[in-house]
Length: 535
Image 1 (cartoon, rainbow, N blue to C red):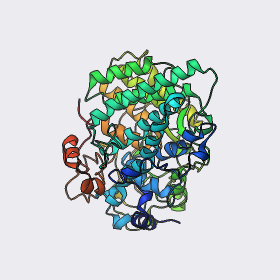
Image 2 (cartoon, one colour; image 1 turned 45 degrees about the vertical axis):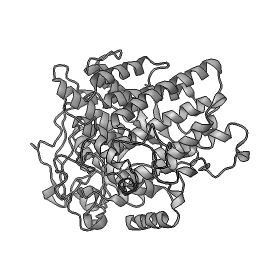
Image 3 (tube, helix red, strand yellow; image 1 turned 90 degrees about the vertical axis):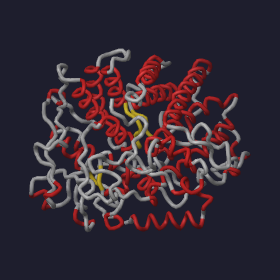
Image 4 (cartoon, one colour; image 1 turned 180 degrees about the vertical axis):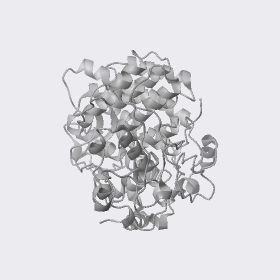
């Protein structure tokens, strides 16, 4: 079994010996015009290969699992799994990395948290820049897909760190100037709008053509579905900023709903096929480095949720079975001395063939539910969209909803059968007190909590968006950590709000001080995002 220690050592060796494999945002910009795939122009002639060859890298690097360098599953582990996936409340590791002083106990680890930033710029943005130089004339539609993918990848990076290098990327030897999150979001909206127009024009003028089919790991080359995905991303981003910029949010949401071809109200947007494998299958199923989290156990057990067996595997410990536990999660930020203590808790029910889900039609319905709750013109009422979201998620996972939407169950207490100090008992303010049943007479806040909780359940296992939802709305409620090694920087009840910038940015980018100004607070895990405000 691969261990985290081996993975971190592997990272250090590669960064030392083969630095050109990891082109930092602040290094090697004179080499950006070199094809990162290593394929010559002559080899790429015909069948759109000259531009299409970049797209496996673009699509797979969104989920940090492109087969490059020394491997891939461990890349995802340090880039997303050991931060957002766990901060979201979905998962927890039984492994006490670095003697239990790590991200999970709020001692943020530079050797992990650099990865999402540096690997995205090295392996995603360099390829996107190459596509941009080639996406002219008859190739403009490829550029539109690349822009949709760029927004997909970079809004995730922004929601991990805050300000990003986006509009000025590649324009200087230092990587370009940072955009504030507000500036980045405005650019995202513009890029999505332009991409939709370009693809719609292509569809109108090229009936039945599918030039992207051979390179598409999302929608099989169907540009109509790419447009619906882009519109749905625009709606997601609008909801993200609803508290901090309500007028802009309303405008963008209503434009997304009325845009050509509408929203993604069926199916999922996910990376799959063409050799892609899901990293969580290895990290959970083989390494046992991430298992079920306590908050999702509490909610799904309390709701008697029919998706529970779809998301997680039953426990493998006979002692737990004898105590009546079928599924058991681990609370984040607890004292763990040895991996064997909790390793027999529930694994994720994910195979290597599982698609890497980035958006679902269920989420789109919940976005519409919140938009309607805010009084925006999105063509329906909150209750209808809410119920449609629940049913879409049940259908996606092959679960029988039964009377789920009539249930008034609330979250169940969390019991740690190994250490009762980690229990979250009945009456705790951290237990989620809303049920699946919609109540039209409830307050706006209760309705928001219902929408956010069901949306969070439906987005599993996509931790970055789930963590965004938790930070943005405060729902569902996540249990605070018990052991806090932040040195007083991050309050246990405040939770981690973002990741630190990588050391390379602090040490090598002369624009770093500008970034801190744009961030609006210290470069640590306690500083909230621009959109992370109270209404």
